Image (cartoon, rainbow, N blue to C red; front, side, top):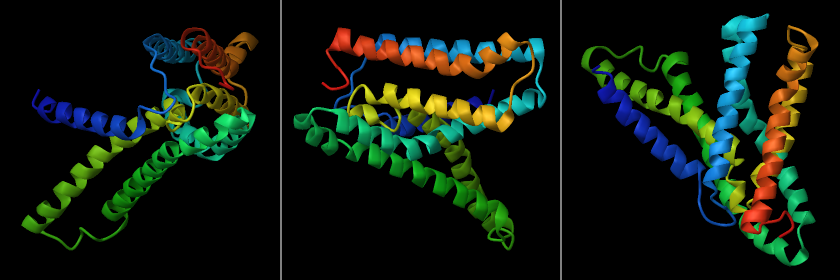
Length: 247
């Protein structure tokens, strides 16, 4: 498998860069391996349940449509975080005791920088694709010069595409490193975003196929399970680590 010699270093490089920028330590963040394992398990069960419902009851837009919908949701989540996140954070800090508000505000620089890195990633990726496919920048080159210009450009896009999707996954999970401000913020923001996304899904694509219970599970299984997991995470932060929403 000669491609493994290229894919493995590429994957490692992308993962290191994405984690360094979008998975920051410090501040109020609390590391809990049990929470991480439960989150991964819930995600895996959700994916398997979605696949099972599709194969049993089908879908109007087919498997490709479901895959496109999942990718679109992965991309939509950071956008919703950027829009709704500041509102949730502002209310969260307003709800905190007066003596802690200044400390929480001083930690906002890390989420702001994370948002900046993500927006820059999107801009660079879109610009690179446009320069390669939407302009005649490479069309006038031939022979060696085309090779010299095209290979680095294509390699950069090949690296940037998985970096973008991995960055999107990281910011969706960490809510743009808001745990740096307060350990409970990602769970609170996640609950808000998941229900906003559910409303978008209902109003945008309508009810899925199948019996009533399948429609209910398809529409609300994800939001309810994420909400339950987030509430459990908040309880664990309080009982195991002494972290409360106002603490």
